[in-house]
Image (cartoon, rainbow, N blue to C red; front, side, top):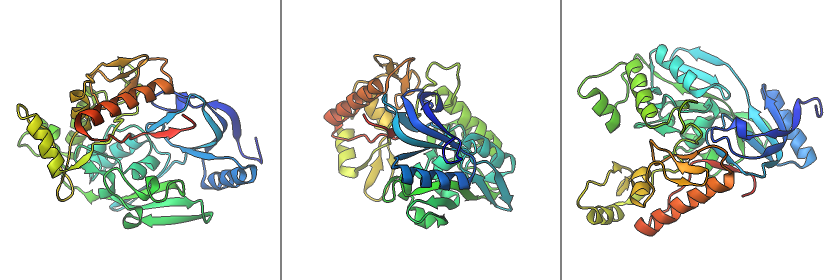
Length: 345
């Protein structure tokens, strides 16, 4: 207990992340109220401590050395449903929230089923999957502003959403702490079937929201993209790399080199296409099940780097670097990692 805050010392962070990798936090607090979050920032400022905000731990890689500062784990809970707008506290489990929305016949998040983590992390990365992005549904984001020490509500436009981008992970990194997110839904609306895997799953039939959620979960399970302790691939951060967006000329050059097969791609902004990072990784020589020490590539999806058991952050980084170097050497494309790296590497 420091300054009446329930702060602990030397808390292992590995069990609080889905990769199960990393050293301890020098100081740690499980923040269960907005007041505790504000007080923790005040304390850190007085003590000269660096801060890291931890949510569900599904998109982070912690250094083997740990974090020499204060880790604030967001544990705010609560859901408020008002007509077609639903507000969820940042610490709410994401998939449980999606399940609630589907049960209430609220269309807009059904394709984001099965993604590990908490509500607070979804606007940061503009989480997306199977043709749907969370920014399509977000109405506003309630935040603690570290610069002013005040709580503010940011509109969708103010959040600056793009593919896997928001102001939270680009122009205003570290400034805001997400406290809750409000989503605006289409009550009794149809599911979004825009992704090939889902279209193939249902063929010409229009499914319900519940059927779409179950289909997404089924597809994700087949790729080890749902946390299942019985799955040897479960220690991962999900998709480790972003799907790169390249110019049409670059894509056509790659397609010409692989004229014997159809290079998968999806439309992006004008004059650009998105190429699946998994395809690039596989064609750069990293097959499913590839191993480098205790780190490896998932046996079910080349986009996921996994801890095979007892892996260090150094090993995970080593595999990441090898994949990036090989893809760049073969295709001239720089793969950008999805996870946030915590501590000194």
